[in-house]
Length: 150
Image (cartoon, rainbow, N blue to C red):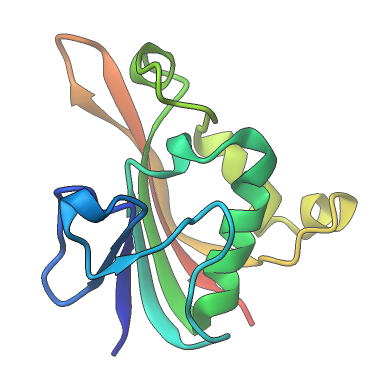
């Protein structure tokens, strides 16, 4: 079973291939996710992306989601946790360059939106919700678990 952890930073996942664009965090694999994910088509069982999607520039987000879809096996799992625009964290971090919330995912799960924007990635929602991760600072994250529909 191949599981990858995108943008791992210092948060490495045991049993996963930990990928980051910075060698200084000592990932298993150094790769620029703005370009591609260095795995063959339909070769990965699970993709984890915790606090990484918001660091992908807006013009490259569709490409990354399509790369995640490309490398996932049919029915492969995509798990993400991303600061939601419904809380303060999405805009507070000066390194965030794209913005996400629950509604962002309709473009990858509903055929009419996928067709409108020629998005190939097609996911089924297993779980999609917002969760408060810090009451004091009013930080909300969107958590999604999706299944690749191929």
